[in-house]
Image (tube, rainbow, N blue to C red; front, side, top):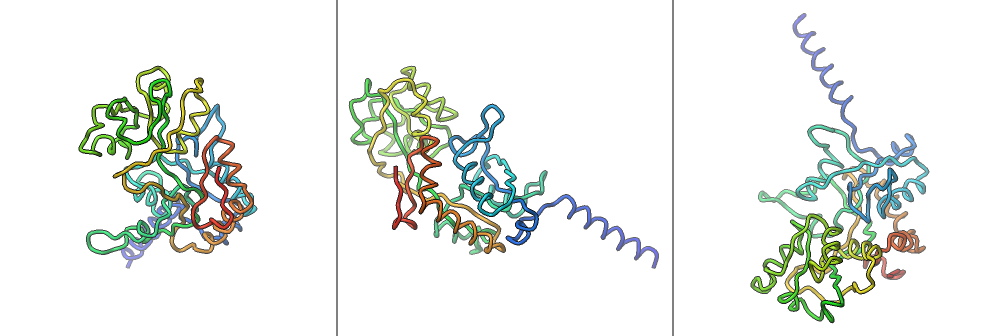
Length: 299
């Protein structure tokens, strides 16, 4: 009997230790009662979320601040590093936590908003994203090329990059695209950099004639270029797959009430032009997701 009591006591203490070191995503009522909300954003990802001289900056930082203000709670930012895929990021930051830090956020920004992606199933037919609810698209993203007009007159099609060097970020879709599209005809002209800013520096110094990357990053960094001869191209990207895609938010699947409240805030931000103003602040081209087209703001 004594051993049984000791066993149950040890189990109880173990459970207490687990719950003490683990923070779970919370309901809308819990967030309001606690007067704070934890929102996950990506680290070192300008123009969306980054730090400059000790200050938190970026589109997602401002969006998170506005959401917290409208909910009437304090904002607690959870800076997260990008993993191998979005599935892992959702797991580690929203519903399970990683092996070292078991805490999770209440809300995660910059997640895919796509029905097919949200309903994706694994090899045995189970929903891959069963634990999360993705909602509230707040931006439509796409690819963009910026080029040096002193080296290239215009970019009517991608075929021109059979003859001109173009910079891309390592392990990005543009990199794989330039290496494989059109039977690899652009492969030898693709130059690889660890980041878009470094690729743009290479264009400024004449090492490449153009750069391809996310439109939001290209338009943001374009404002920092000293030479006005760098121009945005208007070409399409045949064979790249999806030309445009929506970026939204996510919560743990059990907390739909929180998602409804946040979705209303996001819709009001778009309807009132607040979202457009935030993007303009960081010199980013903004495109309203199709869900809100009746009051579209594009700049």
